Length: 319
Image (cartoon, helix red, strand yellow):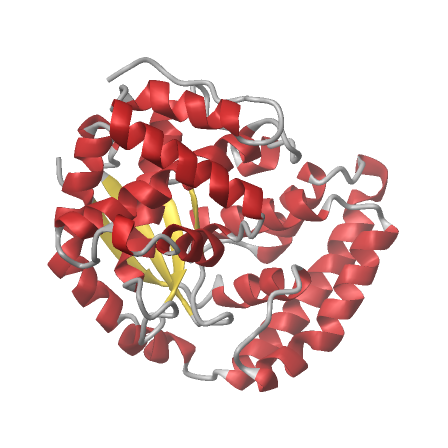
């Protein structure tokens, strides 16, 4: 089965992606943009803290809501859904929504002033990544399917091209089969082609939809070490060495045994995990998987048990 990518310009999602990165303390590559959104972001963060909003749930729901309904998503509706998911009660929901929506509007204005022709810029910036995908994407997914199961790969995925805030970033929503990725012109990690991050996101969508008995929409998710967020983490980590090995098969990378730090580099760049013990566990799991070659669902459950925290992965029926 061939996965079809439907490319779209993520000009509406780009300011929210930047805001999410700023809120998470991630360094931006454009100092003028960082400075421009600093004041409304500080006010937004202060308001969310005052109302004891679960920040992880808020940002997760806000981005997935806008991405899933791109480009017609209404900011006020997205803010209200995200705040409700993050624990804001009905009595204060309207007031908090109005305040948060106002700050989001200011962030959008600052972004528009910094990038007045963003849609046209993204169309050009996205060309190298699209060309890489056309050249290598189908082959990468074919090898990923061989290491997991071809039935896990999604049929169609919407890919939103974002203005780079970090110089390499992306995420996805398996429920709507939508991913978003910064349209970088060069590889953020020189030794790892950016098309591999894109393949990782596409594969995550397929595996999350197939492996979770009942995928949990972002606005119903319960953040924390258990639940859908942990399941997403386990699947995302498992796919990293699988994607890298697929690139080895296409001769895009040297064998992983010759570059033992490559898995750690991809983990840090793609998933954001920097914990040494997580990387070490992933290395051990991958070596065991390569040696024993168990069925992929069995292997995935093994990684879930090996990682810190309570195992929570629920696999659907085998394809």
